[in-house]
Image (cartoon, rainbow, N blue to C red):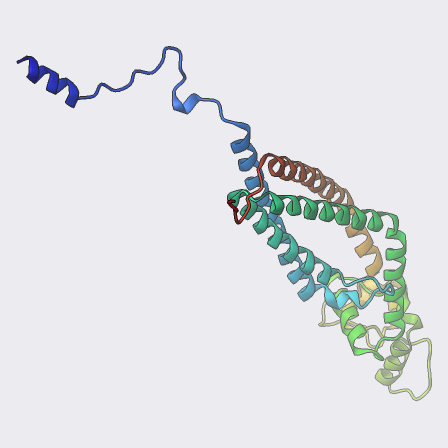
Length: 290
């Protein structure tokens, strides 16, 4: 019987008893490294999603706004192309940031931090340039609109862009419909419409894109009564420049707040990447034994 009890005691092992006062596994303190990894992984995913959003915005701008870029007299770099390139680069580096966190690669994390720093500086430079040179940008757009009105009919690309803008914003001319009084196309079309062989500069036509409604729009030629009450002729009374400028001014606060918010988020991402890279020991691909 004694041997049987000894055999049974050796067979069944008593489970270890936790120490008095020890916290259960779910409530134990988490180290700094897991928190850094989790925070940087979340940031990298958001960074990747932001890059994808910028790239999508660039595709939309390339498809919808590239035509309107022709109307500006300024020869700045193509904004849709910049959005496409920036979005692609941010998306790629967001994926590399997730890879650096998952694989514990300090060199990749440091490169990721430097890329975020470059992106931050480029974004701030672009935002400050737009803020300081907004008057030049606005004046270039105004001059381009006026030139498109004066040269209407001579350049199909600019004429189509102007028509599209006037239809989309429900406007007419740069400052207003009176800009068309200086256009050679407006006078020649009015003469052709009336059948007069003389060059009657008092008669003027407006393009169909200036009409509120295509039907019953008295724009070719514009009747003399239209000079006194342009709205009765079915013509848009507001200029395109004021509508674009008002649209930008109404949203400038939201744009500035978004840029500043993204800047602060990127500063946090740079700090996380550098902290995690410094805490990780570099992994050597080969080890040599002598």
